[in-house]
Image (cartoon, rainbow, N blue to C red; front, side, top):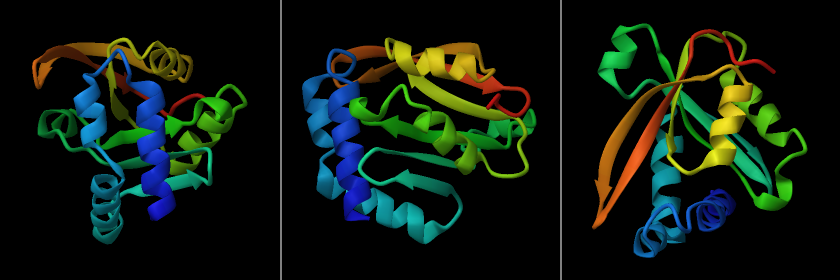
Length: 154
């Protein structure tokens, strides 16, 4: 779990400068991430796939009641790759492995400005369904809700 927490912190440090306030990125340090992963793994409700030293994906039950009521029962909680691991198909492999054998509708939230993630989701068949303003500290950000109506394309 310690390696997963470290990987998560590093991926955030690579992905979010300029998109989130620096103090928000720093707030999610290794100790916080370690506690989060310990709780997630103990819960046992999500599927987590890890490529050691490269990235990870996590898919689990939909956390938003309105989406679950519409039949979107699963949610991509996280899909992160280190920059050095991007562009070689590892993201697709992690995504497919976490999605599992019984694919169906799926959702994911992406921070506006994370263009690489948006292109990846769209290339796998997702559509932008909604833009949601949110405030993090003093910063106003926009979350993008992506939906896959059917199994993501490999």
